[in-house]
Image 1 (cartoon, rainbow, N blue to C red):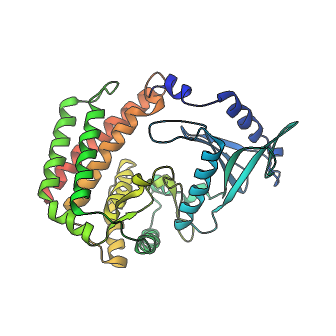
Image 2: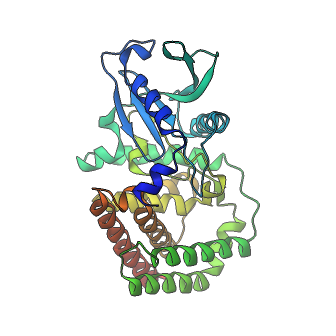
Image 3: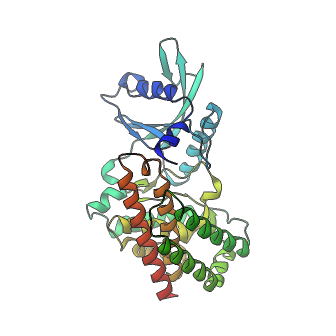
Length: 348
């Protein structure tokens, strides 16, 4: 999806612009903040006041999601709150209606509702894991606390009903589909390298079939977070893990080792390659779950390929001033995919 087609995928953009303009005003909020800071992602707008964050989903339709109706946005706001409360404490406060009035909008009124927002307690930016990594300020105690919280979360989940064969087939299909998309326009990545990495990932699946089947039988496939990145983790006191992937359950169903490997990958990309091994070691102390090193590296390669493809498909990757940023991000992920499939082979 290029920038022009992304803009066309937003239904009623002028209505969204009116809502955003109103939500940028401090007078829109009952706590009357001094100022409102706004952050735009390709799926939402987030409005930050002194104490709270308010997320407004864009009326967007893609091949993965459909937020084009008020009812759909309400549903996914409720899902976002429900799912994220699993890994947070008093952060996701609820869902607020946005109503249209004769003079504009009103937040919190049940009359003439035209949209819905997720309300969150604002977390301190200095405690974000991404920021702490950049300051080299993550301690062993932080990692232990995060591992303990994640262990409680994963141990509370019901194992998914899936056969080893179905799980292996799903991994193989994703490898094939990701490589196919990466090798198609508008991708500018090395086509031969993409094929080599995908071939080696498929070969690893065949060699590690019993190790993967063992994890399925042990109940390690769960409905997890789905998007566990350093910018979604806060280390103040008890760790808080926010912004799970709410719009597609299938993307949340995965091996626990896969989810933790993706977090490890992201920390490595940010310059902290040791974080993953330390997190897995701490997690093992609380759960006795010790996936083989080769499997961790396979999952890191697998996720790096997926995120290379997501980078090339980002709305700003084509026909936008920031296209260079996203194309460079894709090349970084491709290099990480190669590095970790090499490591998987060395340790297998």
